[in-house]
Image 1 (tube, rainbow, N blue to C red):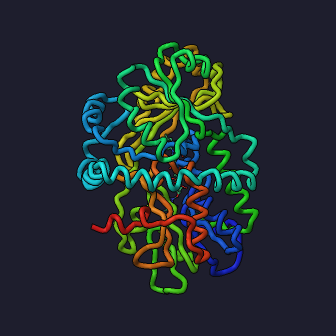
Image 2 (image 1 turned 90 degrees about the vertical axis):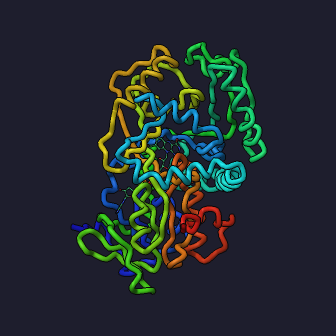
Length: 424
Ligand SMILES: Cc1cc2nc3c(=O)[nH]c(=O)nc-3n(C[C@H](O)[C@H](O)[C@H](O)COP(=O)(O)OP(=O)(O)OC[C@H]3O[C@@H](n4cnc5c(N)ncnc54)[C@H](O)[C@@H]3O)c2cc1C
């Protein structure tokens, strides 16, 4: 049964579907523009992706996942049952078109195009996110201390140099560190790292779930109406007031609809005939509240593909990319495997009270989000598919969506993020 949590005017300017970090950031930006906003979520407090991520404002991640040459590595990883990449073979037929497009995204020209589009978003993240954090009272747990990528081998460090140089061209600030500098920077790390890359502009937050709660409370305070309900389709029959139709048949109407349902968005886009390649890239982590070590910034373990973030609520150790769809139960052995790596590289870390988690990264094959109007109906605006960077790009997506809602020309060209790229 759809439950109205808070009442307001009948036909709002905007109905935002999805109350994760992206939907809330869109609602926040629209409210600040003076729009009336309704937000629908099937479970506002539920443990979705935005609640448990690594907390990184990872603005330096301006190259797609589909790096050239990834395939040989990927094949090796697939034969390691608890390695960084896993594929549930039952999911292969569904995921095949996604993987074919993923492969195309590694093509040299496309890789460059995607990187420029990612950099265009990432390079403006702080301009958008700082005002949002200030407004919602989140600055006290926002840590602009950079991040450290560490390498165990000379070979892996050398192999990544080309990409680091390319990232510098994209505007990413970084400098290489020797083994001694790595140890001085983060003394809790095991003394096995031969190289480091310090990323000046990466930052992290204290607790992703707290951030979502703060933003939701602020959006409520700014006057949004909250509706609890599972949306099954969009209905465009009334061009002036399209509707989000819930599973119980209720119609929540607005002048514009914003689809921000993360990894669950393909079905809603499909309900009005917009095709998108979107899959859940399931990620795992473990949070250690009583860790007992000192860590100042997020550490990225280059060869092992996992990260450790010193959140306010504990050190969170996580990563992994598992393709098994939205419904398969979590395989927490992956959290355990990541924790075992964490213990090896952060010796002495205490796992008392450890909490395991799995979340669904909304992944497109080209690592670009879907932001922009539906080619079928300008009243429908998409804001999903942020993959590894949904927290990072949340406020920027909100600002761009608010531009569209207010009929302003968005600050950057939105062509690279259009859902039309999946048309054939
Ligand atoms: C292990 C891991 C680590 C990560 N680390 C980082 C990081 O360090 N930095 C970073 O920037 N990003 C990170 N991410 C990615 C980031 O968490 C996601 O990109 C982001 O949370 C996506 O936000 P969202 O609002 O689009 O989706 P979600 O948070 O999934 O929110 C979608 C909302 O839509 C609702 N919903 C879905 N379908 C319906 C429906 N039919 N009707 C009604 N409501 C519906 C859901 O209940 C949910 O509340 C990480 C992800 C994982 C898994």
